[in-house]
Length: 483
Ligand SMILES: Nc1ncnc2c1ncn2[C@@H]1O[C@H](COP(=O)(O)OP(=O)(O)OP(=O)(O)O)[C@@H](O)[C@H]1O
Ligand SMILES: [Mg+2]
Image 1 (cartoon, helix red, strand yellow):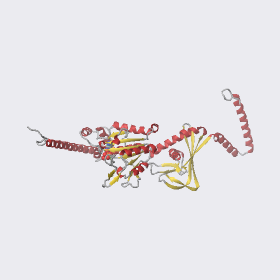
Image 2: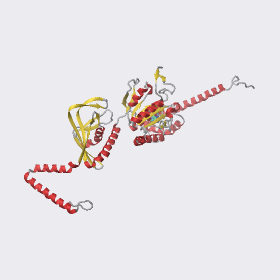
Image 3: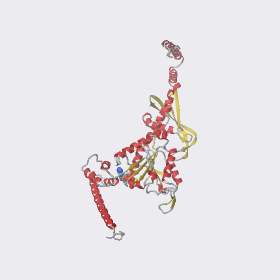
Image 4: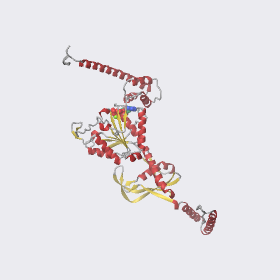
């Protein structure tokens, strides 16, 4: 073929090639018309056409359900990703509801094909299901038990060969990410706690159903916004933590009086992030090694909570490791708070992703300095008494009152004049379904509280006066004083 100086074939050579190809095809048609029945001709032509169109340029990736004994993450992701697409494309579906998910999952019921598109590339997913002659042993990752399976499942992902790099480097990671977010959306949050006598060192888990969210939480708006921003930034900073060589973790210290919403805030964080919660009651732990085992059994994307750190456990100071438990028996505790924190740091640096640790306390002043040291807890969050804005939020959540209500002014003035917790007000607001009655009850409650606190203030002042009078120097106190 003639080629011009741009490396392209010339017009005359293309024309000549086209003419000889057409002559060849016409000849082939004449021969086949005379020798073969019409249906056979049609079948052969369609085969040739299909071969010319697809065969030479097609690539296929096989994604098996199992990688040896273990499940294959890419297959699992494929199943989740395609579950959003098969509803429209396929008539025979299989549905199930895994125990750790909220919604029904839709799966392939038999060998089927689905077409997907990604940045202009057409991708064909084929689900293949085969019965095996012999069953094989695999690990059920939910229970860690060996189970026998007698089927083989896999996906064949086919596409134009020229997009191989793009599919491997972009489409599959995109599909994995998508599956991750679908899974996160569907995920049921678990609350893991230790039994009263956790000699077995295992976490008991139940479904976490705390309804608290950032929308229902009455707290300083600026603090709330900066916490949400902090959590968002934390989730997106995988590369940053890797770059600076730090464990991908974040620590929060929540402090404030009882009933100001510290535990509710933890629940709101868990619901926002869809992270499991591990509630670590340090008093239940006997040995340092038990603690390590338990911590090793916590999962990524989780919140480790240690509540009331100042009083729930008597962590030894550096002078003495032997402590008495609640029953007066000696308890050999070999860890210090800073030891615990260092261990968590070390563990999470090597095998932890997206870990959050939250400590709560009613009294920040009583805390071990190890915890307060700069850089130890990333954010100290003060949960304080109720403010008028906080009250408006509670009124909207509990009573459905949006905006203004004639009683708000009086309530605002009462709230500003005393220290009242959101928990106390929430309890009053729950006493009636009728907003008018509830607010009436709240006003009475607040007035009583104000009278009580004035009385105790007066009493305090009286006692102080008496105390001061008692302390006035008597003749015998004042040595060497003469008139
Ligand atoms: N800031 C708040 N916003 C909305 N509701 C709140 C808030 N604080 C407390 N409540 C209500 O009071 C209940 C008790 O609050 P919570 O257990 O979160 O307080 P806490 O600060 O953890 O108290 P403690 O120090 O005793 O553990 C919650 O279930 C919730 O109904
Ligand atoms: Mg609490």
